[in-house]
Image (tube, rainbow, N blue to C red):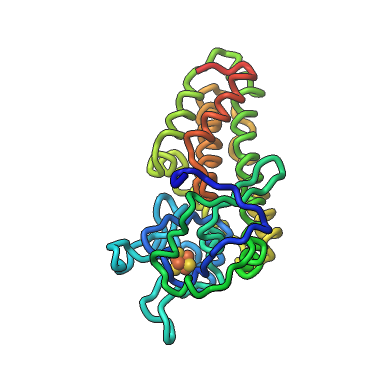
Length: 293
Ligand code: SF4
């Protein structure tokens, strides 16, 4: 059972810990969506671009973990300080990403259903954070309320929709343009390569301008989360409309379809999703509409 996800309900009682500097802050992988990046940047008094360059990796989709290692030799999160006041912990606690708020739980959104999960029966915090043993048993719902997850979950779910719209744009470029009907096979092959490839391949495909548009939109980080994501989505749609909507040559349309798929997959990584299954899903959708590989 240790390698399987266990579904947990909101009223389940689980021995959970806080996220103020236990095992969650060392040797972990914390995905960052654009709203989270802007929020963290504001908390550090930096521009999103400056925060991105200094504290993120994998094409701005993941927090850098390059701090001093803990006793297990696991590097600390770049936002973790060995000393904060009279204790150690996160220097951006109020602005921490959703993954940190949920830890040690995972969360999946599918068909309107939200599922919280835990990998295995033993919480890693129990071995690595002595304070946990004294924490009261809480329900999952109480834990989530204590972690103030509402805004972060709203951002995550809104960006999932943006991701799907970007993939839809890629599908429209391939199918509705007539490119697929010409017998084109290169587009789906490149989508597959993007899904199986790493962040560097996606970054190279996006180029600096589209990477900036995706990860550090020119928006006020203090906007309410729904307004921030909606404005970001509108800006992406406007840029795509201006640059990609009137393409006529097959090669140019293919490049645009690959670009939109790279955007969708890169945003997916920023939401913690695996690229390969996502790419396979959208390739299957395209094939069901006549595209070939
Ligand atoms: S952002 Fe804060 S809570 Fe999250 S891993 Fe980094 S130090 Fe820990």
